[in-house]
Image (cartoon, rainbow, N blue to C red):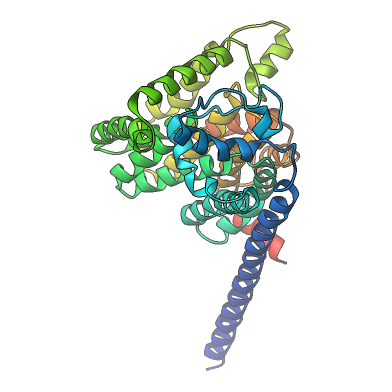
Length: 388
């Protein structure tokens, strides 16, 4: 009888403790979304009335230029108040898709844009990870998301599209996943890397055909608002601008810049980019017996999120929200090691691209099945320490 009472009391204490931890997690989570919404509003007040802030005005005007039949890729300093080199660099389809944010005044459109960037990424992280891992990952991603919103960039949306495509493909919704990948690629080329997630699916060739069709239809969408000959001229102008950028030997905040500084040599980007792509895909090719493991596929997602930034020759500080999402997912799902904690610290301190390049190497080691020295705790235990 006494033993039964003791066991009952012990069980009750465990339930109370679990309820208390869950309540604390909900509070921390609630504060995250309050801070996120307040950040979007605050940054809109900061940027929405600044004459020298050009990023969102360029996005906004691209839709109007498309409808008016004006060259999307020319400089419009009188409209944008920026430098002559500040101009629209996305596809004509991207200009069309900015319509929901372009029909409003700049402050209203910018607020909607900031909220969309912030909550799109938060939503997919929440769908991907269980609690409390998702709450920790959201807070780890927040500093980079803040910088992305401060610049009014599209990188929060790009991260959300890549993770969203992974979730759709994992759920067997290949058509929706292909459309998501195509949408990202029509904004910036690198989200096409998310197509690699379909390699783990038995109907991968169906996915490829739907993706190709989605890209073709997407490229033709601007015909809804502009005639064919004007759209063809826009593509020619876009191609000329991309060719000019490719010939400028831009290195951005990429591993190519690190290599250039270390070797003190000038070289083209593509050899290192091809090498990085081969390193990205090698564990997938070598370990097909692990394709069925969700952990392996999620780790590959993390690697892709970091890869598309650190090997991007045009990566900038706001771009790293994409890589930060990958690092956050990887960290909360890994056992703690001294090395992982130090690398996370470098990423949180915005030591770019070095911190993220080191994180990517650790991810690749995990994909190859190589072991790292461990601390005497796991991430779940670490989370309990934080709660206390």
